[in-house]
Length: 127
Image (cartoon, rainbow, N blue to C red; front, side, top):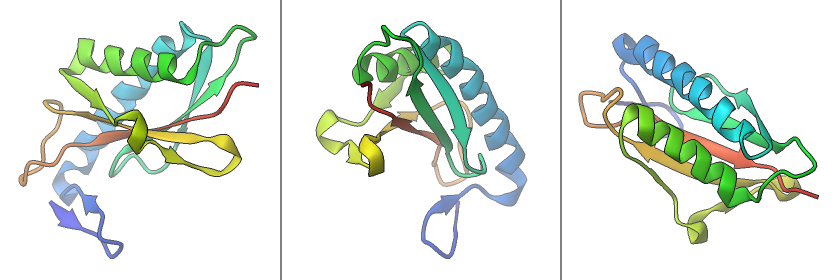
């Protein structure tokens, strides 16, 4: 595992494509899972270090924040192995009411030092 200038882990250069492929697979899992609870999913970032997803309430009857986080978490668990989410007390408050959750999972791609890609899921608030 390599660290960048900002101190964040980066996959070794020979694993970047593998991490990106897993990230795109996660996107394919997250979109239909979020749709079931009234959310749309957008992608943000390079897909080299983590999977930055943005969940936007899309329907009038969109469920609450925890429902979309749980739906995506379950989709990852069902397809890639056990997925864990950050505790609600560890959710980061972001600008404009956005809240950032981290979803951790193992088994898809592991770097030589045991690091795995993760999902950084930002959820926009419902009105």
